[in-house]
Image 1: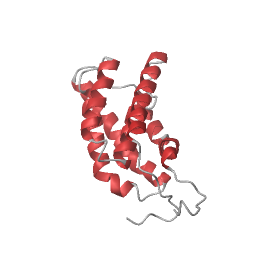
Image 2: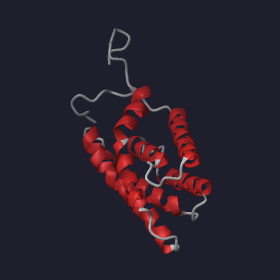
Image 3: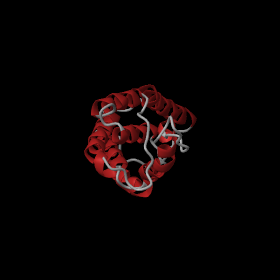
Length: 174
């Protein structure tokens, strides 16, 4: 594959780092839930799931998204399967779009992942509505926008261990 102009060659992703970042996102989600119950805050697990599903679709896919959704459902005490359905649909769409998304710069990638987060949030709202829990608060619709806005810093942080050294020498020609 030919890399787009200006894109650096990356080292292979370390599986320990991938799973550790997913665990850290879940812990951040737990901490966020303990500190405040605001519905407009970003979904950290969804952000990291979409990131790794786009960058490593053979390691993180729809099955991992389903299990992560079940874990979030159990932690938040919501209707079992609400996040699992949303994350599974989001993971499927991310796998479907992963080749296309990687060809864009970070702003273009943000515009591509925003509908994924919106679909996931919309599915969660639909499940809650069908279960009789009512509509989400109006400010809750800001959550997909905030999650997508975090795409750029998340990309910078999660790809940092894979970046190669910029000073090539005789032992490292690339």
